[in-house]
Length: 216
Image (cartoon, rainbow, N blue to C red):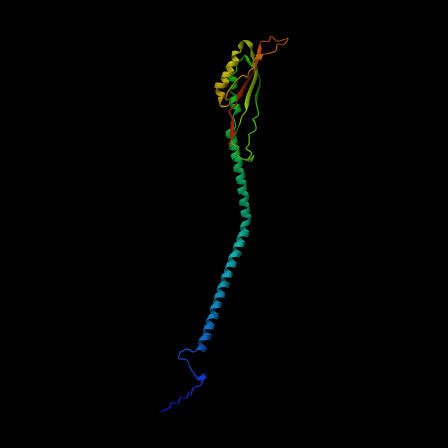
């Protein structure tokens, strides 16, 4: 029986890998690539930071330049809103007011020569009633009314002229102002006779409720 003797004549440090690229070459290459990649990434972030900073600085400069104009626009906008509200109030008042002068100018046409006016009075409007939950400056959407009061005297023998005046106020050209006309009970009476007077006059008072004004 033959015995085989194996002799290892290669030292461990003389062993070689079967790969065509050696490990001590690959590791430095990978390390260099990683280093270059990290450098490029940080350079990209830095350039982005510089770009964003420049854009921010430009926006800051532009905002500072536009600030006076922006404040002026806000001021003009507030003035525009105030003037618009004022114009709306004026328009509402103009649309709700009653043209007393135009209506009263027709009254002389209805007065008989035997009638003498003592006083013509327009009562002040009653204050509008505001709802508790509504602010006073808000549109009230309520009505305010006034009353036209005519006090005068007429010749006793021509009392019918007072009835004609009453009818004219109720149906004549004053109806765009006057809603109705009536003589309250006791408001047509004989005038107290004076020593130097024949006592031939009667006193009367006509009350004419006007059409209500509506504030929106």
